[in-house]
Structures are given as structure tokens and as C-alpha cells.
Amino acid sequence: MPITRRRLLGATLALPAVHGAHAARRSLTIAAPAGIFQQNYETAVIDPFRRRHPDVEITYYPTAVSEQILSLMRSRYTTPPIDVALLELTVAKTATAEGLLAPVTAASLPGVELPDTAFTPGVAGPAAMLDCLAIAYSPQRMKPPTSWRVLWDRSLAGKLVILPAPDWSGVALTLIANALYGGNDYRESLETGINAISNIAPGVATWYPIPDIYSAIINGGPSIGVAWNAEGQMRARRSGGKLAMALPIEGSVFQVTTINLAARAKGSDAALAFIAYALGVEAQQATADHLSYTPVNAAVELGPVTLARTSASPARRDRMMEVDWLDVALMRERIARSWRQRIIVRR
Image (cartoon, rainbow, N blue to C red; front, side, top):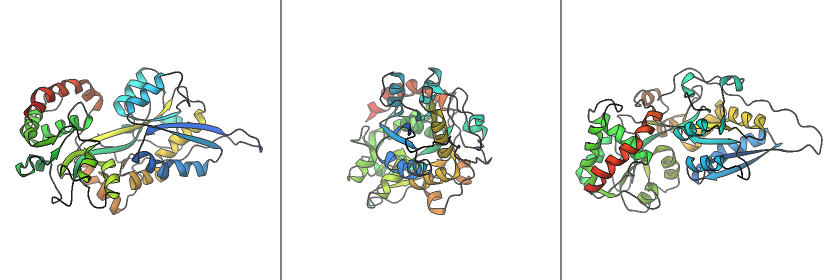
């Protein structure tokens, strides 16, 4: 679901002035992924916002997955209450339907011009960043792969690691394999993709790497795997040359992370100001440079190093497969059942 080329201009909303030596500090709690994402996002986005708004006290609430944030937001007793949430698109859809999120529209973000495709009907918050499925590999044990078809190379049997559906990377690989081998529109059938992946199943070293695909490759286990690009790029920079990421020439699929305002946000002015800043040129540039996510803001101009690490270039965007993740979410269990019955059993 590529973002259009219309300009997306960002500016931080002005916060009401706080006067007096004893003026109360405003608090803002942001729920977002833990680990290496948190380390880089705080440096790239949150710390600069803190410097601009020293009267806003920010708490970063680290979580493992978007579903955990959803669970916390469902509770009336979350301490501290969540004001801003970074959520995977399908989870944001559920949170919106349950009334947990307040709408963030173009009108609520003066000074920020969003393309229509940044908003998804039925989802309260706009897209904040885009990731893509890619190939993780060991540059010490194999040449850089250029095509998804390398996964079907029999010389790599026993060296391959894949997370099966219902994990979203397994679902995304099914869509890609279906298109790669000439299947019909994924809404009609994924039979071609399921058959293609079943052919490589006997060569998979493990379906459930511990603790994750990136670590398994870094630690000298499998040589190649299927994983999300942004985390892989961040991990690769710290791996001492033991991990690298490849963006296949055929293209990939975007995964959308949305930024959302909680319906029970304590201070919506500070929360909206942060959302506006996170969508602005400065923060989007930093998110791409530090975290290797493709910006939503089309006004961002990336350097060659960041362009090489992301799918932000026009050529790579044009090769992205258009996917309606809300439709795919309805198919997810059916895809997972096909994996259990026809793919995993072949190992």
C-alpha cells in the first residue's frame, strides 16, 4: 500500500504556554515497542521533542507487541494511562472499533498536510512509518541474495529459518510467494503461494528460532531467513558483520505502523503535539536514518545510505505489492491453518 507522492508536511503543534516557577508539568505516556526500537526511537524522535517542550514529562511505556498495548488500553487501571500508542494497523482497527482511540484527522493537525493514503477508513490514527518484509542473512556464510527465489535454492536446505503464519511475516511471505509464482489475486486464492512454500518446507532448519531470527543468524545457526527489514537493519549495524538485510529485486509488502491518540488521553494538547512532530519532516527523517523505516512524509529527502536500507526510493515503492491488511486480517487464521496442515508438517 504505497504512499502517494503528494507532499506530507509536518510541524509541531503549539502547546499552551505554562507560566510561573511552580507551574505543573504536563505528562505524556507513549506506548510503543521495547528493545532496540525503543532505544532508537527515543534518540530519533522523543528526545528532540523533549528539548522542544521541556514542560512536558514523557514516559515511554515499552511493550512486546501491539496486542499488549491493546490489552493495556482495555484496562481502566493502566498506570500510567496511555496517551499515544504506536500500533500495527490491524490492531489499531480493533482499538478504534472498541472506542479506545480518538480520531486524528488532518483538521486536528494544523500545519501537517497528510496524503489521503495515510488514513485508513475505520482506523483512528494515521500511518506513522512503513516497514517491509526482507531477507536476513549471514554475509560471512553466503553471498548477498538479490531475489526471493533464493529461498527455493536447494543448496540452502537446512540453513533456512522462517516464522510460520499466523505470524505476520509468514502471512506476508505467503502473499509474496503467491505473486512470485504467478498466483491469482490474493483475495481470490493463495493456493499458489501455499504450494510454493510447501516445497521449501523440508529445508527449513526451524520454524521457531530462539529468541528470534536475527539472533539465530548472528549466533551462527541458520544462514538465511525471512524477517522485517527495519529491526534487521538496526540489529545488523550492531552485529559486527554477522547479519545483513537484503531487499529483493521483485519488491515486497509494506507493514504499516499507525500513531494514535488514546480516547482517555490526559492532555490531548501535548499528545497531539507529539503526533504532529512525529509526522513532521525532522522526525520522519530521523526515524528513517536511525530505525530504517520508510517515511510516510513524502517531503523527506533521504541520503544514499538510508535509501539503500529502506524501501523509500521511488523505484522500490513502485515494486511494492498493494495489500489491504484489514482484508488480510480476516484471512489470517485460514492462512495459518493451511501452514499447519500443508507446510509445517512437511519438515
